Image (cartoon, rainbow, N blue to C red):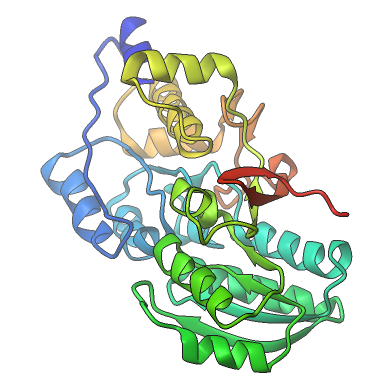
Length: 316
């Protein structure tokens, strides 16, 4: 995105410079966003990708009057932190609702155990799911959180087994997710496991433990032309979700700066709110009054891991 923009003359006649800080998908996002704002003195921010970073860091950006376009962090209500915060990926409020409907009405499972990672991502998805699943007449037979770095969850998993669930809803992260999937097999609990979009990664899909796990994910585009451009430039495959979202976020920011006609952050923020962009990730990206991707553009699908690949789940 940066290369294409600069090849066409940049923004406001100046080359766009990309400055990167690593939030490590953690509370270290506070240090990263402070560095971008105070040390690097950027005019806008693309990111973060993880809710565990977004929760503690975005209030800092809002207080500083720094325009932010969130890429993948999907914790409900993040854009409600303030008028400088926007997001081009659907809220987990929509994903949690989708998962509850799918498990209850498509898979016909009425008794579900919930195991969620204890951070903004896991708790956000858990809260929406549990409320919706119960409203549909479903029963949550167990509801427990776990840490990001847990290595042994057999005690909790035995409680899950004893609760006799028909399915497990698992909004968790990748590393601890693999631990849970492995130990579920070790204790002989063989029921459908449905995770969230954090499982849409090779760390799960390519693992032995991942076989058979299902996960909901927002439908994003990543056409062959875009994939080829990324590969030709980087020598790497364009990640299904984060690559097109990253590209679109930069383009949206650049166009807002151009329309603002200056580097004034208030004007950039005002132009971001007016965004109507035909993206790589979505045919159209527009924001609602809170700065979230409009719900009408959000669609989800259920996928399953088969032979170390992710395929669309088809109900038998």
